[in-house]
Image (cartoon, rainbow, N blue to C red; front, side):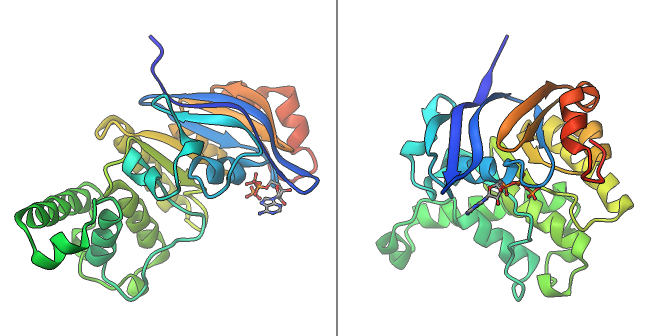
Length: 258
Ligand SMILES: Nc1ncnc2c1ncn2[C@@H]1O[C@H](COP(=O)(O)OP(=O)(O)OP(=O)(O)O)[C@@H](O)[C@H]1O
């Protein structure tokens, strides 16, 4: 039975004369890992930015659990259950891992200045809940050794895991991963594949990912959507999409195999 979490319909975003995304439609099923691939400039990041409400669509719609996303402000997205990571890690360098995760979690919490000033029981309850969630994520991603280390002192591969942790701290239903393997070596990319599998299987989080590394894509994706020049080229399993002649043609001359 179909259980659509995210539905994208006829979505377009133009920048002047550039059709970055042009009438793109797809559904992400609850519980799957769904990956967008395509050569540089295909429109993948623009799709992500539209879903996370950094951009308004030129036309078309995006629904999350049936609710129209374009009617929501960007800050409401996390509360609806959508979290994202960025191509360039966006963490506070001179705060510890634990502090970064608590800050990430606070973005999700309802705020009321007067309640916080009075430190009412509901605020204490929220704080306890935030700490519990953060500790749970630290255990899940095996970050115990790094919890009190400043992010600035961590190797790049660990920072990527911390970014993943920060996104998980809001307890998302949908996790958007923007090129999660960029900058990682082969071993780190293999570990990332295990994390993504665990996030799907053990946490039941649906994953929508943009990724260039086809070995990672094939390893973790249930379905893959290939884009080129703002449009959908093919949708299917990783091997089906990689064999599709339109996809092969789109990658010709890029020096990268689909
Ligand atoms: N803010 C912007 N202003 C103008 N043009 C933009 C903007 N964002 C994206 N574009 C253009 O839209 C097209 C799609 O870009 P996008 O970054 O979405 O592609 P991509 O598939 O994510 O590429 P990459 O794999 O290189 O990250 C490109 O031609 C890009 O130059």
